[in-house]
Length: 119
Image (tube, rainbow, N blue to C red; front, side):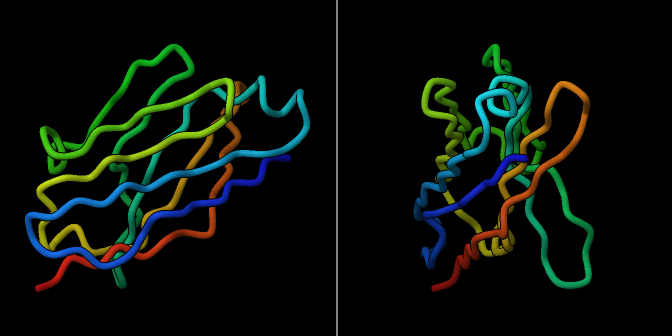
């Protein structure tokens, strides 16, 4: 079993920045079998959508709507994944969920952290 705990959400102005972090914990076996970690977001009435994800080897993938604005990074030794968000837009307002996928394609989810972009 893997537990994911997010931090770093909050309020930002349009054009501003926020950094989200997610720490994974669990047994040694569960930690070493995590492959991809990433971030999804969800707004009321909409499906959860991928924002960015990164493999254990460091290969990153971004949704088109965040390319050039968000950067995902990962520390395998610390079992953490971070999302640096810049040039934020009001439409980035959502609950952001940390996600981890193990080598058996089982998904783990964090509780989510609210990001609000408003002037």
